[in-house]
Amino acid sequence: MNNFDSLVVVGAQWGDEGKGKVIDYLAAKADVVARFQGGDNAGHTVVYGANIFKLHHIPSGILYPGCLSLLGNGMVVNPLVLLNELIELEKRSISTENLKISDKAHLIMTYHQVYDRVNEELLGDHKIGTTGRGIGPAYADKALRRGLRAIDLTDINVFRERLAQILPLQNRLLKSAYQHKGYGLDQLVEMYRPALEKLGPMVVDTSRLLADSFSEGKKVLFEGAQGALLDIDHGTYPFVTSSSTVAAAAGSGSGLGPQYTCQVLGVMKAYTTRVGEGPFPSEDNGEAGELLRVQGAEFGTTTGRPRRCGWFDAVIARYAARINGLTGLAITKLDVLSGLETLNVAVTYECDNNSTREFPANLIELEKCKPIYEVFPGWHEDLSRISTMQDLPEAARHYLEALEEAIGVPIELISVGPDRTQTIVRPGSFLAGWYGD
Ligand code: GDP
Ligand code: IMO
Ligand code: MG
Image (cartoon, rainbow, N blue to C red; front, side):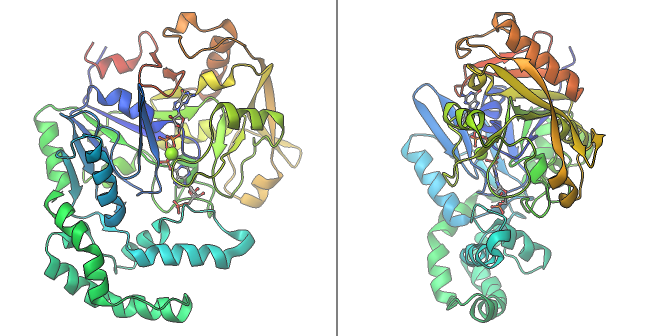
């Protein structure tokens, strides 16, 4: 088994695949965990014993005291929310000493949330169903070259100066197009002062830190947020988030070349969920969908919204495997399927009487696509205490083999419950190289 030093973990569906759980599990062997895109739209849950942590900005390695946690340049960071997240963790005696923020990460400002909310209101029936965290407007301001960056948090005078340059434009927009009274410069500086005091000293060149970590032979885990089908380029546009969620973004979003990213693990639920609007071919609005929502506790970590639920979709899984270059899969929430008599897996779509294995870019075409299901026998056993592949019921093993075959990527890890311990690594998995076994 070849040892390797870096692993990119990405969501391979529409988010909430259980990335937080998988990353926390793998972080036991990591020296560094780095986020590289997204912001506090992410909600990553980590569970061990009676402890439940819901992380939004902070990498899921934070619970390991020796692990360095980095917020990369590709992220958008809300200083007020991050400050709160840090305080909450510290109250629970979790050290945040090892958290560093890229000087080049962009800031989500309070007015970005106003834009997000009003944009959604004005879109009406065509709304995206965003998390309301101001993600799209913050990335838009970055692209429009009128954003603030984390480096501006390191000096209150620079912060004030930079805001003074931007605020007239933002206020004009807020007042004329968004029916908002706008913000005063002093008002904003005071609003952000406590965040500057706490976060300013954490701002560094994280690209340099990462490069140094690699030269010292350290192990780096890249933590994706959202999922492949929410990617700004490759997802179900416009029903996507505003960042590059695919594995290739780990390099650009953290200031490294592609040679540093060795293996790519795609996290997928054993079924499919989506929160927010947009196409979802294998959605089940009947009894099965309801059962998955209840058994899987499918309510958003960030917004509390009920997640839409449906069957495993191998068409999107194959697509996610291609656009991410997945080298392995982590299948989560297998335990949730217990009790279903039969399990459907969408293997192809039928569109205008033609069968297709490819995920169409055209949403009008996608609306017309019907998933063609292969049906597999279910199982009734409780999987939550199973710790080896061979102890899984035969029907569960058969189901996993079918997914693997339909996607064409090996399953390396299986999750049978939210807890860190409810994890099975396939014998002979390349993940043994992560553990140096
Ligand atoms: P993320 O955004 O990809 O990190 O996923 P979320 O944390 O938003 O949502 C996944 C939810 O499923 C969380 O509540 C996890 O605690 C839970 N979870 C993760 N893996 C499993 C699993 O294998 N079985 C069950 N029952 N729950 C899981
Ligand atoms: P994690 O990292 C699931 C969805 C929103 C909406 C769309 C755009 O926990 O998997 P945004 O606020 O990003 O502009 O919303 O993207 N979305 C997520 N769905 N999990 C997430 O993150 C998500 N982050 C954004 O529901 O449909
Ligand atoms: Mg989530």
